[in-house]
Image 1 (cartoon, one colour):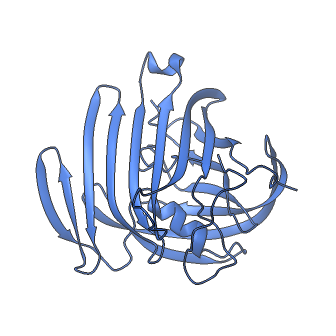
Image 2: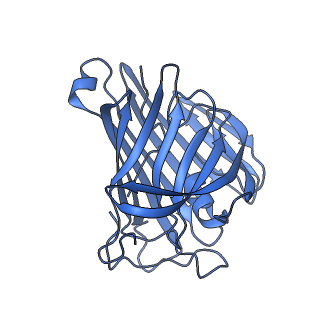
Image 3: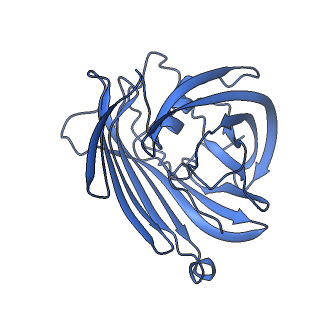
Length: 258
């Protein structure tokens, strides 16, 4: 059976027209992370609407601190699917917009009869992460620049040039292991959907672990090529068929696709 968005990665986002742009990294022209962003996706499997995923970017709650944000992703199965395999997952990641690094992540996993809470605290200066899982706490080394299950998507949105052939490597700490993930732009493609007709970059994500879905092979994400780099579609092969997530709500008022 499908396993919707552990990460998220389908976690996802309504972008308010008055959303405040946060200062992210060196290239001020890239505004891929904004508070108030909320993207909503329909998740389908074998042409069956299976669930909904929402990704949000919120202030981290610290008064006056504009350098941090809270990335929240939720995934829920539809009632018809929940009768057989209910999913109600929530991931929260505290993200430093200056360093583009996660600080703390909590994953509340509710899939079928499985209930699990996972917590990671990143100590980037020391090169370690402290993981709390099933009552066990351990601190393990991580490479510089390590991302978590959700922050990696936002990092890619900001860092990856949306031009064919562009690529990057990053380390993601997930499920007690450091895992190398390769991201590569395959081509530029025009897509049509509820968001209209727009130019996108088709990006392949070589995922050596189960993240967003129980996937077989790579995941493909279609990002808009404008400064927002919004993921409008995500697709992953599973044991039978493929799971697709299509954006159904999220473009800012007055800033829709051309």
